[in-house]
Image (cartoon, rainbow, N blue to C red; front, side):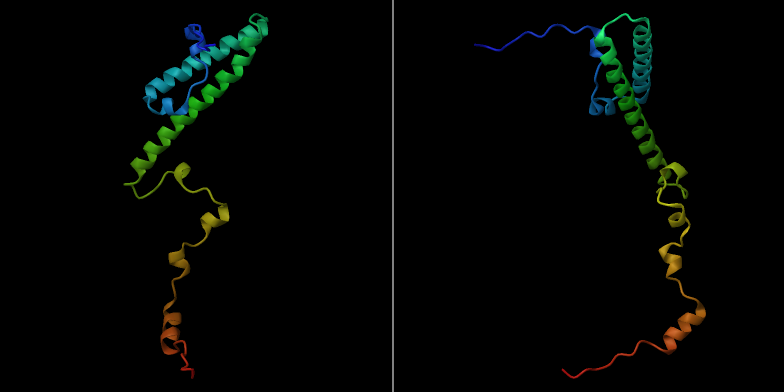
Length: 139
């Protein structure tokens, strides 16, 4: 037999469910913020219906989907914002604190390789006066 089933038309309310990150990346920041706002209002409505006891398990399970969608939108929005900041800070001498490498406090305070390998004048003289001896060995 044939398995071609006609899917029911989705209401605009159900369409707002799970959203893909790659779809969000194509949108503008203003659209993302607008979508975030609509997800948040929907979440508050779902929480109200949860407290009042109306709307069955479908609404309760939708809370998780909406929360994850909000997280997805925020992640993409922050990604875009950070990338824009990175591009802008390439030209400047200093990088904003939140874009720098985290590492550990001690590692951040440690000398850079340039300063760690630098020698004093005295040490440079010693090295030039007493170079490493090379011995010719018989084969």
